[in-house]
Picture 1 (tube, helix red, strand yellow):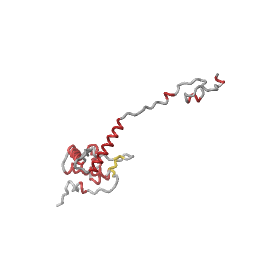
Picture 2: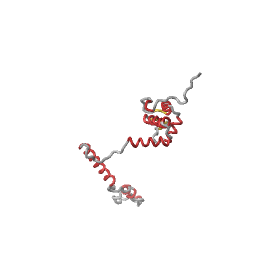
Picture 3: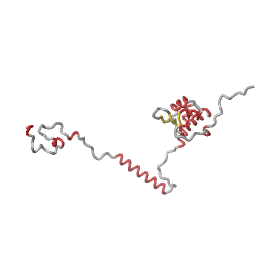
Picture 4: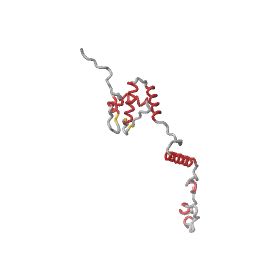
Length: 177
């Protein structure tokens, strides 16, 4: 009797997949690395906000290592753990919230004096910056056009047109009289 092959291939878990040490991967490379069709990757881009590959000048998708790891994680959630797309999206968002807690700028009683000093300096710098940005400008800039005369008398020289402080020329042009 012939031996039957399983329908689903044995795919190594997401963490064990070897990702080459490259700066960017094209969609075909990511497709082969993750064993996922390219059209599925394009669909996942529209469903998961965490998956945003850079598009080069030619419009071709360029995935970074972090993007490939995200694809492998999404694949694991959907195919191995059985999550739906909205469920996987929710799991990824909750993981991101747990990974990056917001840093507190409150000074702690048990912290080192050097650390508290740095926090105080940072707080002072931030307050100074806020005060600087919230003060209005000291003076307004006048338009140059408003200082220029719109029309000049025929007998005025070029010099009087350039600077209104100069009066009429001391030697008027006899031809224009």
